[in-house]
Image 1 (cartoon, one colour):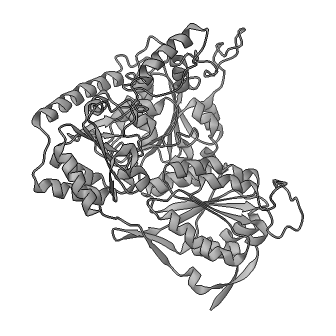
Image 2 (spheres, rainbow, N blue to C red; image 1 turned 90 degrees about the vertical axis):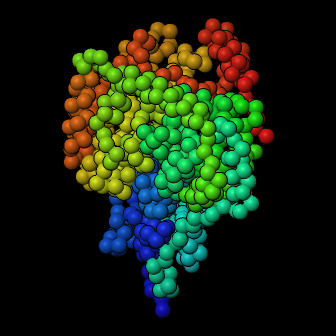
Image 3 (cartoon, helix red, strand yellow; image 1 turned 135 degrees about the vertical axis):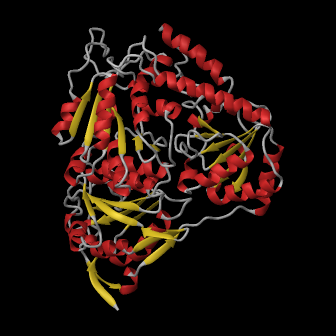
Length: 625
C-alpha cells in the first residue's frame, strides 16, 4: 500500500514515528520542530507542519542560530536520546545554521537541520538567494554545512528521501557519530507529491548501544590501575551522555581514586563526594591541577582532552605518567598515546569496579589524606570568594555566583557558554546534581545561553533553569526572550553587566594586548576604547522584549532579586552590575597555563614581558608518546 503525500509531509510524518530506546526506556527521537519560514520552506515544510500539527509540535524562533542552540539544549538535557528539528528558508536563513551546527557537532550533541535549498529542477537560473559557482552547478550555500555536519544530503528527488532519512536517524542515535545532521531540501522537491510505502511511516525504534570493553583491553586497564600509586580520573562529558554518574561514584568510592572534571564533565560527582576534587586544567582548582601534575596514571572517562583540560600539554608533568582512556569513540580513546578502553562509559566503569573489587584494590591512605586536605583548603578559598563582608556594596562576579550558589538546590540547572563566567564557574560552582551544571565549552559560543535555556526548560519543565549571561553575550543574541515570553517558558536570566568582553580583556592584558578593543566604552583621543562606559541599558532592553526584570545594585538587592526570580512563573531577568576594579578581589587566578601565542617581536613593554613569560611556559610542554 502507498500513501500520496508531498516530500515535506512525508518527512514530518516519518519524524513523528521515530523513537529511541536505552536501558528499556523509550522516547520520541524528534520531540518538536523549530522554524522560521521564507520562500524556501513556507509552502513545503511550513504547510506540512500545520498539516500534521497533531503529531509534530512546532516552536516559532526569531533567529536561526538560536533555534539550533535551543534544540541542542533540549538534546543535552535529554541525554542525547531526544532532540528537535530546525527548518529554515534558503539563503541567509540556511547559512545562519552553520554556527549552531558546529556547536552541536563539536559537543557530540544530535540536532536535525532541514534548510530549504534552491530548485532542483532549475526553472530559472539563478533564483533568489542562489549562490552561482561557475565551476559547479550543484553547489548551494547549504554546502557550508557539510564540514560541520556528521551527515549531509541534498534530497533532489522524492524517492531519495527514504534512504537518506534512515541514514539521518542512524547518525542522530549513534553515540559515537552523533552531531548535526543536515537534509537540504530544494523548495520544489518539498512540495512535490509521491506515492510513499506505508512502511516508511511505521513506528521505528533506534536502540542506543552500550558496548562493553574488549576483554584484553579490560585486563590491561586493570593492571595499569593496580600498578599506579597516584592515579587520577578525568571525567568528561561522556560520563553524562552515558548516564554513568552512579557507576563513577561507585568506582571512586571503591578505589578512593580522586576524580577531577572537565567543563563538560563537571557534576559527574556531587561537589561534596569525598573523591570529587573539582575542575581540572586552565580553569580548574588548585587541588585537581596539583594532582594532575603528579599523577602517574590519568584515567580519562569520556573526555576529548582539549587544551583547557591538558593546560595546552603542560599539566601532566610526572615523567612516568601514562593515560588510560575509557571512551566509546576510538578516536578519543587513543589520544595521548593512551591505553584504549573502548566502551560505553557506564559499562566500562562497572566492569572496572567489578574487576578491581575482586582484588580489593584501593589507593594508599596517605594519598587520600593529602588530596582530602587540599580539597578542604580549596573550599575555604571558595567561601572567601563568595563572602560579601558588606551587603550594601556592588558585588564582584564571584559574589554574584556565590549568591546564586547559596539559593539553589539540586533541582536547579545553570547554563553558560562564554565570557569570564565559565572560568569562575568551573573553579567555584558546587554542583549538586548530575545535570545542574550545563556549560557549553566545546565551542564556547556567545549567544548560546538564552536559547539553550529554552530547550532545557522544554525538556525539564518542572525545573528552575538559569541562563547566566554577560553583557557581551547578551548583545549577541537576546532575541529568543521573545519566544520565552510568547510560549510562557519561565526561564530565569542572570544578566551580569561588566561593560565589555571581560574574559578577553583579561587575556589581552596577560598576552601584551593591553585590553585593546575589549571594553564597551567610548573611543579616547588615542584611538582606543578607554573613554566613559556606553550609556546602554540592557535591563530596559530585556524588559522591552517582554521579560520581567529585577534590578540589583548591591549584594543585598541581588540576594532578594534572585530569590524572587526563582519563585517566578514567568520569564524573569535579574540584572546586576559587578565591581570590576583592579583593587577588588575576584576568583582565584588560573591554576594552570593556556597557550595563546604572544607576539615574538614587539616594542611595547607589556608585549615584551608577556613574551618572556610565554617562552617559560612553552618550555614545559610535553608530547605524551
